[in-house]
Image 1 (cartoon, rainbow, N blue to C red):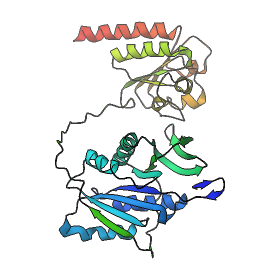
Image 2 (image 1 turned 60 degrees about the vertical axis):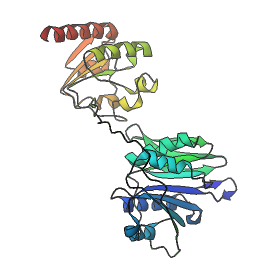
Image 3 (image 1 turned 90 degrees about the horizontal axis):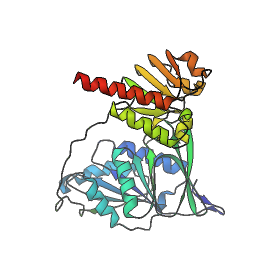
Image 4 (image 1 turned 135 degrees about the vertical axis):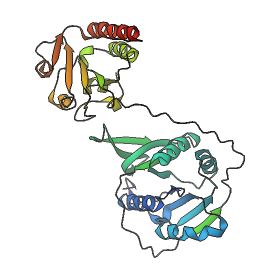
Length: 331
């Protein structure tokens, strides 16, 4: 709910909509539902729709206008979708909005983040709810592979947010209110030099036959970095247990366990992991488990196919050196 301590306060906001793809109806229904659920008034809203229809086919936009959940829409023509064109146009449009809303798909998240830099605003993507209290926005989004709902305070304006693309759609609206419509043809691709670079998909650590998982037993970030460097030399992806991630020794998207990723790799090598139930759920589906730990009584010891008791950093460093030598010998 968009409120202050004294109750509801009017606030201008802008919807940014991409009509270069076939999901514009889906975008509008999701945005309409979000506006309704979060008490954003229709008359305070403004929409900018980027589209590809020439003047001869402009009537095709009528079906979009019928679904528009705000009172004013501006249709902006471009002969093709290029993020830089949209950003240049949006940077010149100052309608006094405190909030910009996007759908959290690939194009929406990109525009949201990049436009926030240009407008010197605040950005958060894939939110599920938003409220305003006094001088800040409170946004909520799912983190840790969707297992945790996090709250984020945004102080300052404008705020640019994208709505989680799995947000429920509303029923098709039947607006009795009129929509003020305007058209603009200034967002053209002339004058831009377009360069296209092939995208190389990075292999996910879940796709690798073997993975290294670091735990609290590594003691500090320096040791994690050391084993990560050794793992990189033998093309071994690295992930971590919750204590390892919560200490910021590894990124949160590498968290293994019930709050993160469930592994099904052929082999998991665990360094300094005790084997708590919440963590073990994340590795139990691996075909083989090797654990290296200084604590011979750690729960993971009884659950491993091979358990080694000793200094995990020292042992893994020697192991990676042997593997690297074997690679070089076979080349």
